[in-house]
Amino acid sequence: MAFELTFHALMATLHQHQFEIARRLLDNPRDIALHAEIPNGALLKQWLSHDDDDEIFDELDSLGFLDREAGPGSYDYHIHALKLHYPTLREQLAREPFSNSVNERWLVGCFIRYAVSMDRYNVLGNVRLAGLPIHKDWFPVPSYYVEAISELSAADYCRFETGRAKWLPGVSAIMEARGYWIDGRTADEMRKAALIEIWRSMPNEIRKVVLVDHDYPAPMVLAYVMGHFWNEDTGWKFDPDFLASETEITLQGGHLPNAIEISKMVKSGLLM
Picture (cartoon, rainbow, N blue to C red):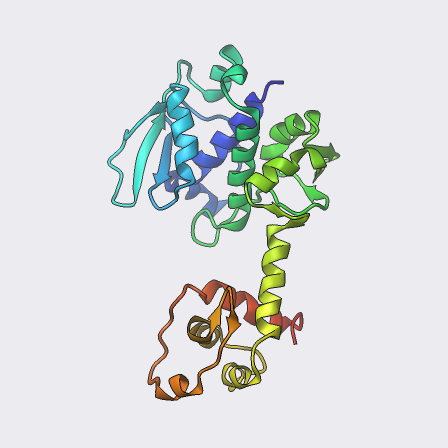
């Protein structure tokens, strides 16, 4: 079946992440008119630090839809532009459908990836638009994704009723390939279980250190002890001599995001 509307929603999501567009949302976070049409020449930013960005830009290039390095770019991103035969992407897709040129599973998976990303990260400052979740319960569908979700529903990837949707087993292979579903659970459920285990298996000696000032751990302190005393494969291993010799907190291992989440769970009473 045709997935032109899903492709349009994917491109709208990519276009949304451009700072020039996102600034409109600072004045009106509900300003979603920009999703209605994607013009010929629309600028798209490819972050060099995001390897996953390569798949969409390589595909756009193969479809003949990309004018590479159309802007000055920077050391950490390239600026490309959509190269269309018609004034807008919607008109392009209506006149020249590309359904037979794109792998359905790739397109649906790529759309879900960017829609999930938009749901989790701010577009600009503290402005965030609703995206799509990976959980298996019912969820509200933003108006700018109604067309795409309707297509996915027709293909049995989800159920869509009165503005709400729910992922169906038909999308399992895509979710698993993207790392969102693992052994019947979502990646969020797996991550939460891992964070709970980190806290519950923490030796009392370390717990006393991270709870010295409050009844919940300070994220910086927790990230510090995780960097020096916790390993993903072997768990906790406490060395009191090392702790006594340290004169300043030095973070290592990139544990601060997990430490922040653990701290929030303890503070809210979800973890004891």
